[in-house]
Each structure stands twice: as structure tokens, then as C-alpha cells.
Amino acid sequence: MSQGTGYRYLEPSALARVKNLSVVARGVVEGAATGLHASPYKGFSVEFAEHREYTAGDDPRHIDYRMLARTDRLYIKQYEEETNMRVQVLLDISGSMGYSHEGEISKLQYGSYLTAILSYLMTRQQDSVGLTTFDEEIRLDMPARNSPRHFNEMMRQLEAIEPGRMTDVAETLHKLANRFKKRCLIVLISDLYDEPEDVIRALHHFRHRRHEVIVFHVFDKAEIDFPFRDVVAFHDMETDERLQVDAPAVRDAYMQQVEAFIEGYRRACAEAQIDYVMTDTSTPYDFMLSRYIAKRNKP
Image 1 (tube, rainbow, N blue to C red):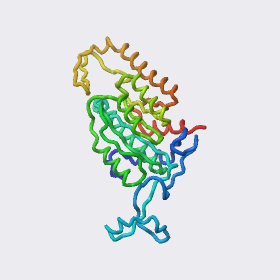
Image 2: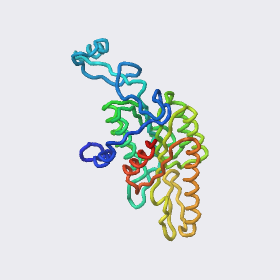
Image 3: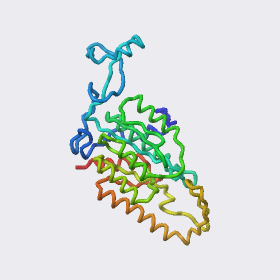
């Protein structure tokens, strides 16, 4: 666990670096005007958020009398305003995300740190944030909320995440695009190891539903640089297949394929007006995020 926060993926030093940043909605996201942030406050309409204790001056119409009967104490029902931005983080936990070269931070750990700091930023600016984890199936689906209790539960769920098995990014995204009825900001964190054409179609599905989308494409540094020499035994972390490879003989072809893989996603996302951010686990996540948000928020 990170000293000072109580949660492994919330590092105080990283929180200090991003504390003055804010993420704004570019498009129309459930009542937020283009280029403006939603009005961040709780009211007494639309969607239930949490209870708080009654204080003098509160409108008695919002007292929860069922809670009064159970606890013999007065509580007020609080609701989220419709104008709050809703953010849903989609974290890929498939087997390939568990890869780390020479014991460094894995892609899943990197994605978990990124999930935690994004959730912190959204909650601090009083937007609603939710978390969905998936491999070939949806494993966790926490809807977007804005309350300390909800945020703490998200952090606890992150603590318990372990890499899954097979990947089915495209099919999972299609399912989620049909599930999320209210327009929101979708943040996908994944290595995108699926057929790119299928994934792009699924991302278009979100755009068709008028969601705004940010893709964080996460690699291990070794997947980019291919620092292997001689004959190397590779282990597929999803299929358990093992393969002996003459690294020098395949390096040039591998590097070309990786470059084409990244550029294909970059180009397709740009055409669909989707923010695409490629990063690797050697780049400090808070530095990467700060740089991205600064660029995103420029007029």
C-alpha cells in the first residue's frame, strides 16, 4: 500500500503532481456543453448518490424516513445532478496485461495506477466515475458514482485484481456500448491485443452512441524495443503456448509489425475523433497523464 493513502495504487507523490489538473468534456456529455466542464455539485434531483446526516436548515422533504425507522437518526438523501460528467474506466485485465520484462512493473499494474489516479481526479472535481474490468468476459462492472464510499470501494477492487486469461476486447466493447445508455466519457486502458479492425469497429460503436472516448494503449518497454538476443523461449500468457524464436532473425520484421500495429490504431482513432495515447511501462504514469491532459485542455 502507498504510505499516506492506504491504497497501493494511490501514490502521494503522483497525486501531488496532478492535483491542479482537471479533465474537461470536449463534446456533449450528458448535459455538459462542448469544451466546458459539467457543473460539479450534488442536488436533490435525478439519481441517488448517498446519504448524509441531517443538519439544521436541511429541507425535511429529503429526510429518509426508512433510515430513521431503522437507525433512529435523521439522514438526508443526496442525488447526483444530471449535469455531472460520467466517466467509465474500462481496464483490460487479460493475461497479456500481466506481462513484465525482467520483473519490472506489469502492464496491468501500470493500468491500475492510471485507473486510480484518473478516478481520484474525477472524484476530486466531483464527476461520477465507474470501473469495468474485463478479459474475455466482463469481470467487474461498477457504475459511475461520486461518493467517498464508492471511490474507496473502487480502490479496494483494484487491490484485488489479478491477470485473467484470454482477450476479447472487441466483443466486450460492443457489449458495453449497448449497456451504457447515458452518454459519458469512456476511458479504455488496454494493450489492445485483438484484431485491430474489430476493436476499431467496437470503438466506433461508442462514438455512434455519442460517447467521448480516450484510449490509453499500454505496452511493456520490451514489446517496443525487442531487446532480446540469441534464441529466446516466448510464453503466450493467454493461450499458454510456448515458442522458440531466433530473436536477431525476426527482430526487423517484428519491429515493423509493432510500428504498423500502433500507427493503425493512431490513425483510426484520429479519424473517429478518439483520443489515442500510446505509452509504455517505463514512462511514469503521472508524467504521461499530466502531459496528455495539458495537451487535451489547450483551446
